[in-house]
Structure formats: structure tokens, C-alpha cells
Image (cartoon, rainbow, N blue to C red; front, top):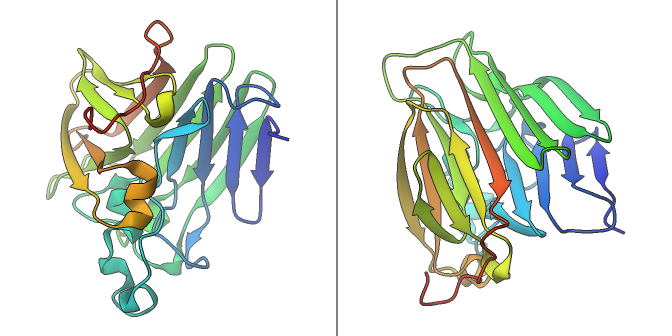
Length: 251
């Protein structure tokens, strides 16, 4: 039925589409929760953005199960780590597993114009006194996804980065990046505030559980916000340039 909005309070997951009954346009999924959920990944505060129903800012999902998946080495697997979700790495520290590493002060808001989830994800990190307020919103009037962060920094000892895992063909722009998604979906432009340096890491995929979904690679965009105490990103569709899909040659 593709409802316009779905809010699941028990797991603190919000899904929002531009309109009911259609995957066209932008979509947003954002979660709170905690890091002891069934089949947990360390992903408190992570989000997904779709274009025409195709994930562009993505959750990689699960790889092929191995002995490590269900043992003490579970979080040595990269897909389980928060640094390979759309979450911050704070002063070099990623999220920890466990029920106590959880979102707090979670507020969902659903209106005709804007659907959003706001939460504090500071307690997901083993850092005393950290507060990190994240608000992720789909603005239907302006046809944009906005993710805003504010925290009690800056921190000086190790880099603090915002991680964005994207699928598709990535090209640099003047103030962000352009992504041509998989499956011919409409391209998107991801922007962030001036003065924030970016880098990227390419993760080649050799596990068919992942490559059958995402192709040969995923790209992690790393926004260095070490000198800041707030940041934002926006995601908009580049409707002027239809997508051509992500062919094997493109990748």
C-alpha cells in the first residue's frame, strides 16, 4: 500500500515518503532504538534516503553469515560497525554494542508538510557527557531531506566525522556530491555547509549477499566536523538530469 508515513514507536523507526501510494520522489527512513536489538548493528541515529524507492544513502545490510556473525567477533564485521552506517564517529570513537547504548529524548513528528525524527544519540557512544542531537526530516513542500546535527564539541584529540554510505556513481560538485543511483532512479545532489572538508573511502564488495544488491562497491563519504559543534546535510533530486542507472562500466 506504500503509506505516506509509518512510525513504529517500539523500535523508534520512522519511514516517510513524499506522497502515499507512490515510491516516486524522495523517501526517508531514520531510527533510534538501542544497540542490543535482535541481529543488532551499531546504528543508533542512522538513516536511509531513497530516490524513486531506490536507496541512495544506504544501509549495507548483512553479509553472508559466518561463525563470527554470532560470536564475540560480531562487531569486527564492517557491516555491523557504526562507522559503516550513516552515523557520526566522535573523536575517533564509534558506537558500542549493548542495551545501554541507546537513543534518548526521541520525538517523532508527522504532518502534511514535514515528517521528522529528532533524537539524542550521545548515549550510543562510550564517551562521558556526550550529547549529540540529530534531526532528520523529509520536507514535502521543498522536496528535500535535511539532517541536522548539534553536539557539545568540538573535540580536539581525534577527528570527528559524519559518515554517509552511498550506492551508485559518485561525482564531486562545488558544494557537495552528485549520485546517480542504481536501477535508473533519478540522481540526487547531497550538500553540506561550507568549510567542512570531505573525503571518501571505496569499499569493494566480494560477498554476493552484498554485491547482488549494490554492485561492485559502496562509497563512504566522510565529512570532517572536528572544528565544529553543528552541521547539516541536504539531499535533493536532480530532476533536470534523469538517471541512466549504474551500469557495470559506470561502476
